[in-house]
Length: 257
Length: 262
Image (cartoon, rainbow over all chains, first blue to last red; front, top):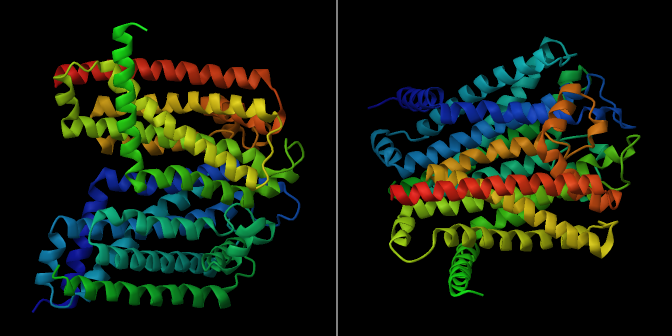
């Protein structure tokens, strides 16, 4: 009987190898966060001068936190694309036949998403530091910030995996991408929550992504990151989407995929 | 009208109708053209409204300022639409079959572009309508709206012809999609979100100044927030016309090559 760890390792190795050796997957994953970071931190830095904008570490650091979580989330979404693609080309069908414990498959994809996130976040962080970003937090803040990124990556991967396991076609790409895109951009992206205007501020106040971004900004500035709110939200999203992904796996099994 | 021109006109009309039907029968193609620019308009307006408090910002309302961004995004989608449709015609062999008929090559290109322009016009009307409901004011009045649509159509033609060039040259819908981020980058690295004078970072301001998309955005924006600005409009119309002429010529050449290959 093939053990859990072997299935997980095999799925992780295959998907990670595909990601790292195919420029069409690797380059956009790195370029998109860098592009958003450049466009937002470079083009909108004068927003730091707006009355009421109080972020001591500067606008580059302010935007870095958003891009960090965005890159983590989209790494998860792209991993979901990979799962859907595996179903479309028949690989997933063979994988499910050969893996007695199929939860290991999801864990393998989760490890893949974390590996992707680690590669992309390293590049984005190095570029941000070279670009003059100041990090005012201590070692614990660095740990907290990247721990948040890990949780966001896990939650997004589980969400996208749930969609992919139900649809089992790459045509479901927009159904994985759009909700994540909407959740990220209906948060305080450009300015702090209090400076948002209109209905977007109302939505941002109840958007679970908001406390995550605000906590990341708290870590960067070495200020008071509201961990008491961000940690349960991050954990809750992971648990919720884990249930979503596992039910998706059962559906895929029932469909004979 | 000469019989030949009449035939060409009829062929263009038929292919434009085909292009329109093709777009409207696929909600996945229509929805992004209409909803995505409106969503970003809403998000940017809420997120960047605070920018109106910066000294020197040209408007009291960010939604007036941001309308140009929506129109430019619509133009980008027309690029994708034109390019993808023509690439699919290459991939599916439609172009090869068409080459066996008396259909003129120019009709294929003009018909496709006309269809995409019609969709652009409709999308532009929706952006403006939603903008007006959200409180947008066009300081140049009704005349400004007419000029706005003329400029938006010309910019749409410029981007659509570039999409057609890419689609016909590569013959792959995937290749057209691959070019989308490049054009999206051009939009973000322009003065679309803030006036050039208010961009703090020197390198970004330099890029935005050299980026022709900045002048297209500023031409559209002038009609909403500045008034009749001859220089901004001349630059926008001029750049759009040059890009459209180059794009159409390039696409026609690529079509000729593609039909010969076929």
